[in-house]
Image (cartoon, rainbow, N blue to C red; front, side):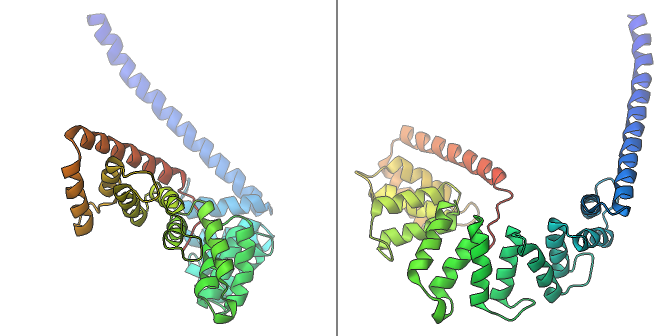
Length: 311
């Protein structure tokens, strides 16, 4: 035992020394990597220039510095780096690392957009809609949004639907609005799915169909859209669009739709009514469904962290 104590007392400082040496070696390796990347960037490698911008913007291996980041982004953008051109547009638009100048931002967005950069296409359209850096022009916005939408961007699809439904009278076209709302809904946007469900429920722009309405409310509710969850609960409670009511599902969805920190009289009343209809075993079953659904929301939120939908 005494020998073991001696060996252990020797091992502990030895392991600590090894750990320190490895850490120092790691820092030295990282410093060498950064020096090599900086040398490439200085020599005109546009990919290295953009990466240097990313490093300083995110504070990786260096102190975060937006001004230095912008300098590297700008060099890469001037040399034709597509992502750098879009990023320089954002820097000018929000005043990050440089002075804020939205008209210059639009020019850089257009440089990237003309090379089919989806987010840049969307941003140009948004600037024309809101009159940011350019004069308001919905017809011009439509052109850019349509390009972004053709690349599958749901935010651009939704913007087009809004213009065709509520925009300038000369541009209004309910059939086109419906088309783009449907495209956005099929692309997975929960708000668009909710709107399509309402249209099916009320027979507005679409043939009335409660089963279709329930189906679209379900899609939206499963993406944690609260208004859709409350409507879906109502459908299950009343049996709309199905053969008969399903109080267990209704209880589960009302529970999910209920705001956690504030009362909602209509939802609370519905839950009270359902508790009178369900057995204790059925309520336990409904609670298990709530737990299962909420786990799915968390997974979907994580997977959709880079969702391009901007409203």
